[in-house]
Image (cartoon, rainbow, N blue to C red; front, top):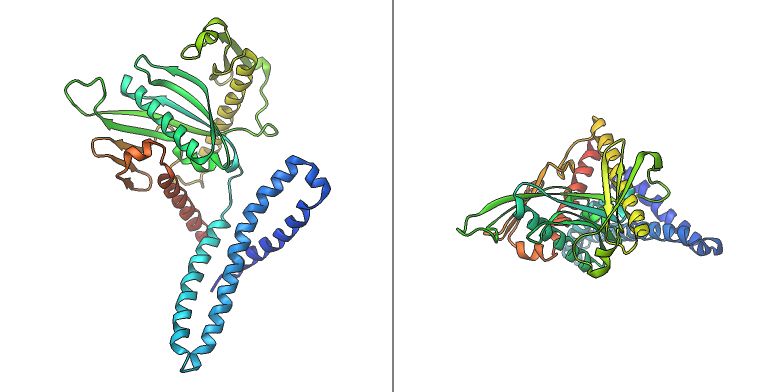
Length: 360
């Protein structure tokens, strides 16, 4: 039997869907693109809940009709089969509806910055950082997202000491948020002459791109802005002008830079956006640490020192230590097939949220 509190929430969604249908047809809303897009996104979410709720109600009516047929000897067998089918689907629908009604982080819909830094392991760690950047870039392409390199510090062998990517698309941060943490690789490096397996590590930090209306306000007096000549690939132009920009936030020492753009102005704007995201992430982390009721849970704290995943190349194995997930499809994952991993992390997070709600 569905809880009354859940029924009330679902009824409110059905009412809200009718309101949204009305609002989206209004000329003033259609003329305001920002408002129209916000209401459209809400409509998509509410419609998904309302659709599953309508299906649940239909199957509840089917169940009641089948139970009435049990008294008829000629229909009893068919009725029992229908009852079993209805009860099974109702249970599945209720679980799905509970997940759809879980509180959503407003940052989930945002674009994201992905920072990848080489850790222990020297040149091999830098090469692995490049492999991770390629993995996320290919996954983004498969998802229809757009990726741009904000800054990159290359190693001598072609890897990255640090690289920052900006990923733009639908629900980017919500899908990638659990990638933050320590990523460990076990393999025979290209530079290894005796075939020995080495262990190296990188750290990944995924941050939501701040909304311009909510972003932290930067005080120009607290910033030091340096320009320098960009390095790396980019043709003749990139080596002729001091177009790269580095911004230092003096109170915290946090640094952001960008050298991908063709002009100093564009690079400065991008570097300031990265700095705002880093400062916002610092605030989020400190706030989470202060909240005694916040439990680390299945998906980890997102702390960059956490070892969240191991990529074992000799065995073709990927292991996510937070949810005890092991997949023997490592090369596919490195080629951008991250869907199964991201789905498993999302489901684990939802299961924990449901457990917390049941405890209340």
